[in-house]
Length: 250
Image (cartoon, rainbow, N blue to C red; front, top):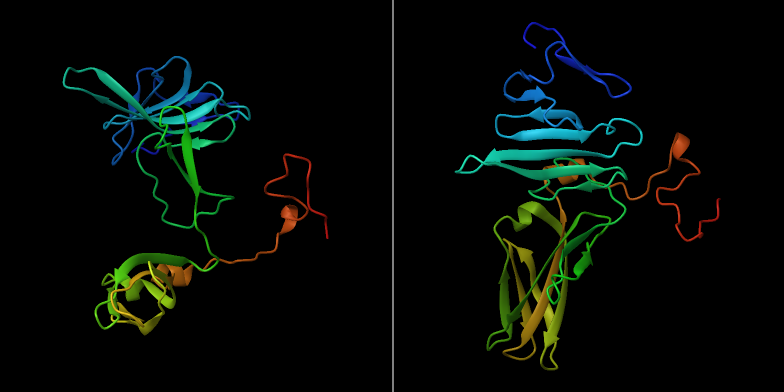
């Protein structure tokens, strides 16, 4: 607090101790403007904010075999009823869930795999649908579209005005649709524009262009594609096999 005294502490066995009454609660310093209190008698810790932000956990959540740790957003409706929405949870298996809202990461994110998960569009009440991310070792962005050439067999593709500021090292792919024809990149990207030429008029062309990020963050934080394990990491696996298969050690 403002006087420099400890308002509360958490011991190694998960016991919360406070210089003021936990049940009565006390005000935390700005900008949080929050109160701390026991709230739920079954919870080990609750932090109540003026905007209804609550941190809560079970009696065991700070022990090695804790049950859960969650953030709950509390508010009131027009009738004064208290509404609670869980916004973040870590369960006893270490799985993280964000039931509502968005996740923003200002730094880098490393993962074993990634996908989107949605209600299945053909059977939303009984199935989920997953798609894996498209990934590359070099911070690649992928853009595509369709265009039809004019009477001279020419077409101009205009990219957004930020395109060249974000990307470099462009690569192209063209696929002719609906007929046999030849298509080439007539003019490579310049001024956020590239052009296509076909040997026949009125040819529909599916195009793809990729670029490598060159923004300041990307240039300062390039992905290290290969990295040697260090110290206690050597001889261990991030993802041990669940079916008895393993790598041969070198």
